Image 1: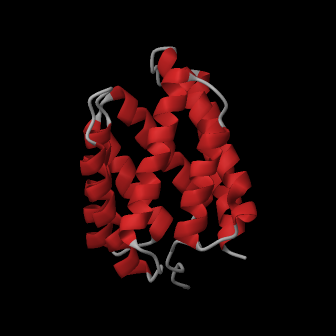
Image 2: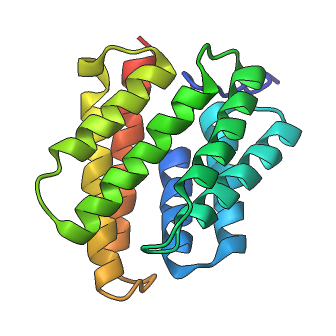
Length: 196
């Protein structure tokens, strides 16, 4: 029997990551933090392939960063960035990705900011696509054009999510399934870009 190859930042299961992220987004908006943590554990494990201890520690940091970010409009972006800095430091240590964890955290929380602005004020989604392209190209060391389709599909998923939130956050709402499909498409495109 062959052992399953270890997952990692350039060899993740796009379907598993997309499903886990959908679950964490839904839990975030429903303020179901234990469910969020379970989804984050799956997302970190599948997306980065870190060892069990680093996965749990990383998922905890992602949870705490999202809790710092969640209040609207009085959130704590500095705390969210600090927690995501610690998360990316774990990622770098355990996966061998070469990056500055502080810069990665800044880019991560920046797309959160741009999304929140887009969610509440509307307007074009090009700045949000651009913020995700910035994050992906930096974290994965990929060309901006290569990660653009992944960013575009993730923004599509955010649009479904925003409509789902506005409609009342019902788990049986078909918008959640559409969000899930878009996130799987996004991670499939990202995997294609980073595994070249």
